[in-house]
Figure 1: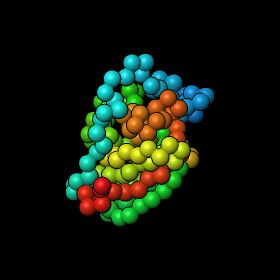
Figure 2: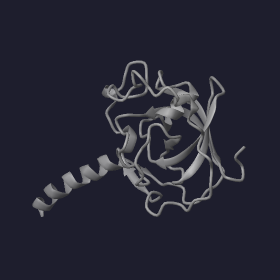
Figure 3: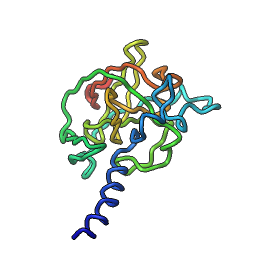
Length: 187
């Protein structure tokens, strides 16, 4: 049986790393002034039309079969919502970019840092949220298709395109308000 534990520990570690998604690195990897990782900050030459990426358009989609099950990330248990219902919260938003570009999200879709998407620990996948910068008043609508962030005090990880439109791409972090939107409630 001790041999079995030796085999299970690496498997559990691999599963835990896979579930930690977009915010799994240790705090030492972050910049001094921003919320992104040293190897994941703003590009030197982002696409010229980054600010023209349209908001996600809420539509009625079935909930993902697997991405809304309870899970453990970095020692914490999360229980995602299994139905769409009103939701509002405030906290710090961070963003993730090139380090995860093209890799699978919790929904199984490839992450596109130039799309209006986001990661949230418990909102249903997929769902849509309006993210509003508390300081600037700018807002975007994103499609929740991934899990994270898992750092204390952060409530959502937005794509680089969303971060750019919110005015937080260079800073890495921003205080935001999040509210669920649906096809019926979207403006």
